[in-house]
Image 1 (cartoon, rainbow over the protein chains, first blue to last red):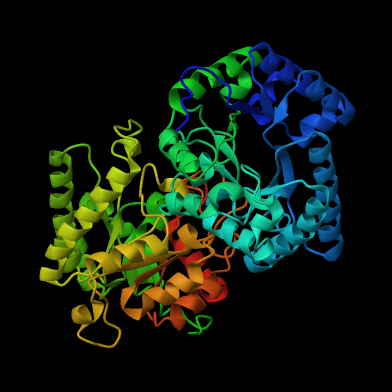
Image 2 (cartoon, rainbow over the protein chains, first blue to last red):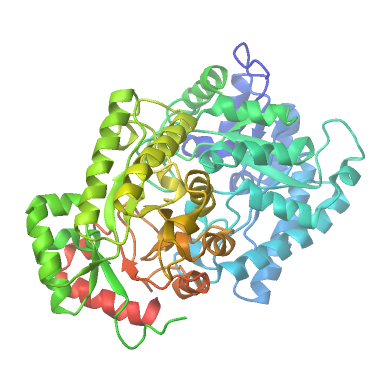
Length: 298
Length: 298
């Protein structure tokens, strides 16, 4: 396993971690000031300062993108809704490509309307069909431009409103069904990503009794991203009470060891949704803490 | 599938559903007044009015117990803690037996100390070892007195503090390891329960992509209990914001159909933790609503 204790060469900052600290240019400036070499930006933050401005900043600072957040949200109550989702995913692929992101992260969506608090369906099977069809269509386009897609299984507590893909096993079943020959994607290139893989976020999967086995099953070509934060005890909010690495109960180094044993050698991306704590702190403090914990607790 | 629309013959009330309505005698009186034939009481509520008083009420009203809540909480930081848990589980088995409960429900426990907000370990593997050993020891005693044990897989959001068994698949793996020949337990009696089985609570498992297959795998002899409530959108609290059947997104009849296709023919037990809604209402209103929704939404 790589030794992270001496530097933060392999740290990436997901810009959601600094949602409270200002706009994306402020966040990027804080990252650059402290020698962070990679980020993973969210589209709403990108669009808020403008895509071209973002691209200038990324290129100007020589930043790598460990991922681009996010595509997905495929299920809809009617054909028009599904078509709109596909169009938006196509734009997300294009943006990820222009920024040379390692992958486009897919948060696949849940029951139509649920995220807005007004569900239009209880049919989890229909939602999962929409997800499968949506990924298939997006994958075709993403392959044509060479942008790997990363399905992010979300914690089962988000099955209703954010993602009805909830385990790595389920995500890999989708990968194998929709992209059955990853070796064709990568042409055997060392370290190359399959066209369709998974983003492993410890927050979403740490509880899974099959986690080690499924990471091994994924293998190098399907492990597109590794996200870290921590599970706090108690957790006071389903969405926005995630912890800084080391402050909760997840044995992050154990999971990273499984990732690396399977061949993953990419960035460890810090993604923390924390409305009452980290989002209230200044950018420099948050980035400094991410660096410290990356070295001591990841 | 059984038709529940015409009566509430197969309704059981888990007494946690009426936590706000008073002591157990008040809760039982409300159930009896409205013709509920079965309950599943919690030990703290039983002990608050006295075990003998509870036994009198149960026998006097001819109530059946669809389960007894709860044993489990096996993981501990040291041998003394594990021994204390085993002693407590033995007492729970005895109480369940004296009340002629259908099964003792096991909420197996999570990381030691986490439920008290002061975790003493992050080692999920050690916790799962304690759970396995604790169930094995309790099973030996429970078999000797003829009390079936029901492992209740809890939603993964409780993995840290309440139960590190989080899917039916994981629970059934334990059943098969610790009680490999359920036919020996039941001696082929129709409807008889294996010594070790599962309690399927729709709230905990509705999201699981393998749910239908794992219910079928369990089969008649290992399906010890069926708990219902609903998943609200949004859910505002991890523990105590569960919904009345029909108010959320779970397709309960679909899951009940899978249970019955596998041979389950027991009670549908309503268990709702709802600090801000149902626990604030009078017992008669809650029971009446459970009856109505049992007929229309289960």
